Length: 138
Image: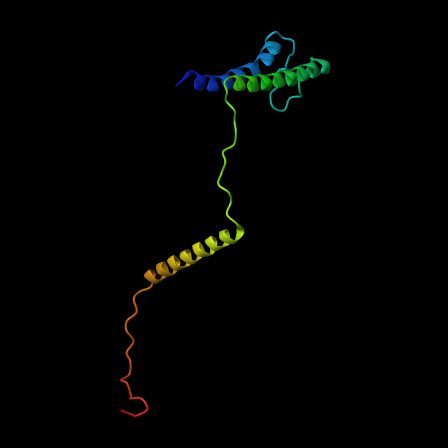
């Protein structure tokens, strides 16, 4: 695997790790505290962190994520990796699609008729009365 391909894979992995940094630092240093988990049925624990602290954290995280997206685009640009959708063949016109669908329906019907005919037991030849001549009576 060449270096460029390896970097194309490692850049998103590194950015995923970087998305966790603000939460790890904030909760690790105790700037924000989550209330303790209560057993089922107990009243919820009181949150001691102020609403302003949570709001500041959310706004910072939003800006952090925006910066990481810019970093992703910049790094892919430096690696000369430009994502683009794959061109597909043009869709056939409606008339052609209908004709193909009708043809497939015909083939499916024929196949189904063959399968039903194969399931039926073979018919014995019906006894025919002897031919009684035509107009001549012969």
